[in-house]
Amino acid sequence: MAAQDPVLDQDGVRLTVDDAIATVTLTNPAKRNAQSPALWRALTEAGRRLPGSVRVVVLRAEGKSFSAGLDRQAFTPEGFEGEPSFLDLARGSDTELDAAIAEYQEGFTWWRRGDILSIAAVQGHAIGAGFQLALACDLRVVADDVQFAMRETSLGLVPDLTGTHPLVGLVGYARALEICVTGRFVLAEEAVSSGLASLAVPGDQLDGAVRDLASAVLAAPRDAVIETKTLLQGALSRDFEAQRRAERAAQARRLRDLAGLGE
Image (cartoon, rainbow, N blue to C red; front, side, top):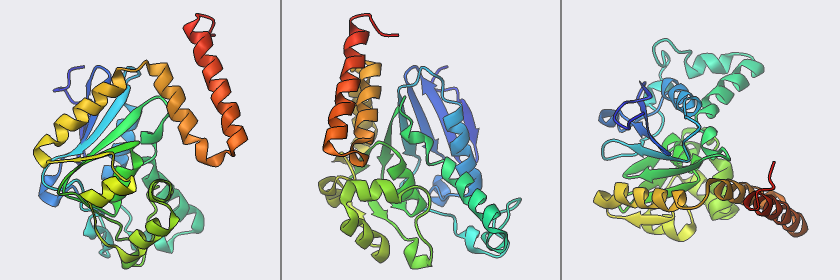
């Protein structure tokens, strides 16, 4: 399907596919791409609709801001039209509340799938849920005006959209804690130096830099990229010897495949 023909276009999310590259775009710049449960469900649906040919998924946003985070309408008594308000959810049972949050998290989970590599192109504000959505991706390229912030704690909440695990893995426990509890901005220079971002570029070069990175990923054989991603994803949960064994097993699979002896 050509890139100009959306596979999905609903609730502030558009998915297009051009051969091996899919692009998920946040499409509500008038509200700085503020997020809602409907948008989170649309993100989940975008992941379900990815064709098997896709190797790289680019996440980007229209307008000056990547995402200003959760739409403040969520904190009003009425919440979003057609949705249970957060107050209603809080009054429900533990099982119901857990299920609701788990459903929200699904839109932030599939970006880590082993068969794709995801790249977030982030400009302007990426706050709260916006920060966590960028963290859902494998890699981040940022514009030099980027402003990351985790504001949940200052609102009496916690980051719950799968952002805490990658944040600690990227910057370490102490800096992750400080970023979350202060709610301060992390700008482009710190994002790169701390490992949050791979590269910072002027805003008008952001899309080009992401295309270049995607092309570099596609230049490597797909199975080797998948094996490498899986190997690195598990590295922190294994001790040194276990990682050595995982490396040997992965390399054995690659050698047999290259020799035409794979299953």
